[in-house]
Amino acid sequence: MKQLEIKIMGRFPSKKNETRKGKYGNFYNAKQPEIEAITWQLKKYKFFSAKPIKASCIVNTHSRRQDFLNIIQTIFDCIQSAGIVKNDRQIVEIGDSGITFVKDKQEQAIIILEELN
Image (cartoon, rainbow, N blue to C red):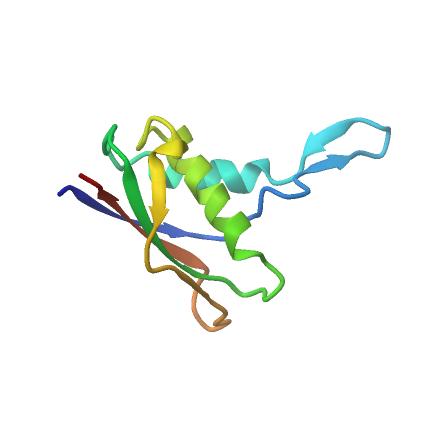
C-alpha cells in the first residue's frame, strides 16, 4: 500500500467567501495568493495514485473561527492543482483527522495520503 506524507506551512484560507466585491464594483479572489503559496509548496511532491485514496489531516491554526472541513477542502483542491492526484474525488475516505489551535506553533498541516485496495 503506497503512502505519502505531506507537510504544508502557512495559513489555510477556507473556500467559503473567497470572492470579494471591489471598490468600483469588480469582483476579485481575495484568497488567491494564499492558495497559490500552498500549491507551490505541494509542487515538490510527485504524482501519487489514480486509485481511491484515504487522507488523514492534522491542521494547526491560530484562529478558532476557521472551519476544519473548509480548510481540508482547500488543501484537497491544492493537492489536485499541484498534480499529486488527478482528481480530489479520488479521496474517498478521511481517516484520523483533527485541528489544533496553538498560537505558539507555526500554522501548518500534515496530510497523509494512503492508497486503498
